[in-house]
Image (cartoon, rainbow, N blue to C red; front, side):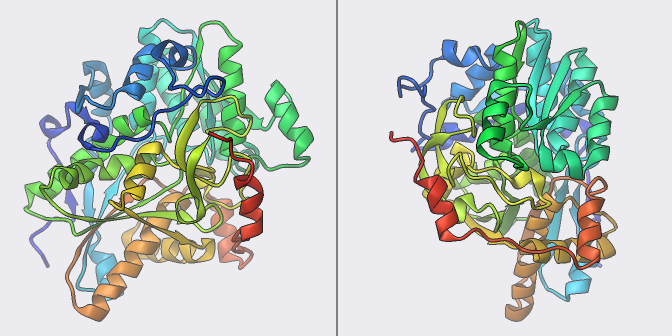
Length: 454
């Protein structure tokens, strides 16, 4: 047995006091987000009409390397942070691999995922601005759950548009949000103009994150005292999620461990960006080198099969344009069970890092993901979220490669949350009813051909 403990905990005093902004170290910055009407970079004033003013400032700042975490947010973090970095000894034994596998576990809070790291920050700035409430979208429900908790803490109204397929598949996640005081609406709904339009254009649609974003933005701008908040994709969200990577790196450093490979699931980019930012920062500054892998579902492969172009962040085309790897804002993914990864595009920061070949990407099929989830659950004692299990799949694959080569690589992956509200998905897998869906080139071409001409 190694002298590395199963769980590496930081002391409360070792928690990050600042968020890290990886854009500050990027020589080639992510392309600016554009006003869809003028095709000019959005101004602070324009963005502040949608987001809280302080969050809009964070979104547009690509030169400040560190932002102080307000004391009230740090105090809230202390309820569930620092989160453990766990050595997966039992998984290593099961795989009979010389690799050392570590996972940063973000599921030890009631929301069950990493999303609370940004939710509490965004709710804090909304309260500080004197707002009545916020609107948002959610896929599998982790973000909506986290935001409902954060809004309850600050006594803010919380309106959540939940992707319809997840609303129907995950009723208990929905009820947790309602317990914390949120209003939850399946999207696309008939409550908004954009929702009615999407329903008319795609009758019977199961929805997408792009649809839900459109509805949440419309709801925010049509109510006085409300702003829209987003759980992924945006640079401000990756900034808040950098606590994951900062803690992971501090825990590794505490025991003199150098990561060789860092793996994260990728939907919009929040958990991946948060996990890898401090490590990428070292690469950008020439201090270290790492192999970083983004893992996405084969059913929604924005990095591996998308195009790098300006696109709308939402299906209703009411949001600003962002340059990102995208499948087209009109792409409606299949109703797979990794609801948090059903987004047509990828964070501008992650997209630029991928375009610069600082990180790589892989797509994996759903049944193989759940096979990895089952293996992990049986030996490590945690039922992982379907989203997180994409990272588990590739971590296992890489550990098995080490078995073939004899290399004792240090593999670190992000376990973004638990899967206890995803039992319908596990039931389908256990019953042999789960299938894999991979969009054809023709499927993707239809939505990619509709990209705005910028």
